[in-house]
Amino acid sequence: MGEKVAAEGFGPADPQHHRDKLRQCLEALARLLEEKRFDRPRNLMGLELELNLAGPDGMPSMMNAEVLERIASGDFQTELGQFNLEVNIVPHRLSGRVLDQLAEELRTGLAYADRRAMELDSGIVMIGILPTLTRRHAISANLSAADRYALLNEQILAARGEHFTIDIDGIERLTCTAGSIVTEAACTSVQLHLQVTPGRFAAVWNAAQAIAAAQIAVGANSPFLFGRELWRESRPPLFVQSTDTRPPELQAQGVRPRTWFGERWIADAFELFEENLRFFPPLLPISDDEDPLRVLDEGGVPRLSELSLHNGTVYRWNRPVYGVADGVPHLRVENRVLPAGPTVTDVIANAAFYYGVVRALAEEPRPVWSRLPFAVAADNFDEACRHGIDAVLRWPRAGRTGTLARVPAVRLVLDELLPLAAAGLDAWGVEPADRDRYLGVVEERCRRRVNGASWQAAAYHRARDRGLDREQALAATTRRYCELMRTGEPVHTWPPGTGD
Image 1 (spheres, rainbow, N blue to C red):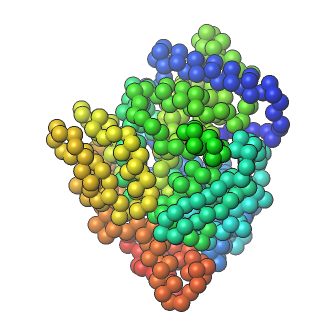
Image 2: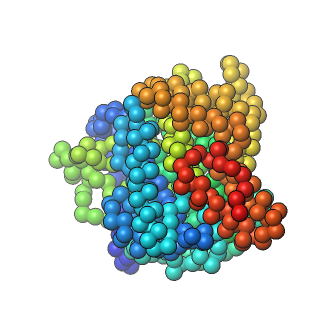
Image 3: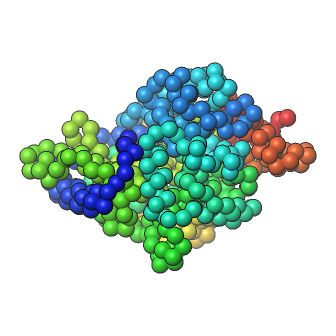
């Protein structure tokens, strides 16, 4: 949600002044790019993991403030809902045993947090959407107690002018209204950051967009929402609708949603920042005293805080990020596609797949985005969200024809993308043992056609077949999921059913 902000009202002059500051920030960014002021290649990656809290009964636990007090670590912080937490891993260089190092850091941190949560009859759950979450939990009273969440909720509601409509037609259909953005808190994800130079940014972003569907197909973990079985990865349609500032009339006019896949391949990073200003009015017109152009004239590096704040309220699945570290500006691609979980091993396997494939595709002499229409990449993303491991995607055939073929996602991953991921990790300098271990997890998911979403759905239906009603089956599925999650064994090895 970006920087902490004070929950203060805005006067009519605030948006106008803020818009001027945003234009100054954009001009300053253009100058920084033109003057080649950005950090040199450092092969740095970072990871953020959003989490749910649930009690021993599998029900959501509105305890994040109390749990954070027990954890007492700056690595953990609040997220939108009182049943959410987030953990941040410090940046690492993509080389050597980085994957095992990340896994060990996550296991240690999450085990500690889980123990502290259990002192309060709660626990950490890595899952895209908690199956036991219901509409009675998704109320504004369950927003986290931080000014920025209340202010964001107020501004999005004001921009929309009416309640949100959630309408997702999947295996079952869910239709409801929401009076706040707290429904967005149902979505817990993994954000993978990759620091890139301006010259490589477009290739990395385009590659990340091209493989977003494959990421979802192998990593889907959100088949349930508010008691209904929907898409295999229900986060994206929920996120789109729960942050949509457009009333129906603006939707009909083709105004873009604040959560979106995009509409074209890019040639440089500046295009995305400029689009964000051109298409989306600021939600939080909070301005600081920095004059970014004066800072540049004096040889300094501007923070561009208004640009960063605005950028954080446009929810691209692959988001451009401007940052400053040790007085040097840098750019990052933030991949926001994946759901949390099911286990640390699964999270790191998903990261290995992403970083490897992106590196390989970004360096191809004839890039895939020159052969894959952007609209097809967007359609692939929706197809993967709907069907997960069983998705069928369109992908360019090998050779010079440039024609597209329909191919099962598992075959695309096994035959083409996993070899690319291995080559990409080799190019990063990742240890072969780490490469093979974590890519092997993705390979086995594809061979067995099992991921978090398919396991959850199968466990739920087995519970229903044993005579449990809907709520009982979802609770049993959640409890068994938590039990197996704590073993650390990847989801493709989990025994079927709830074990009750």
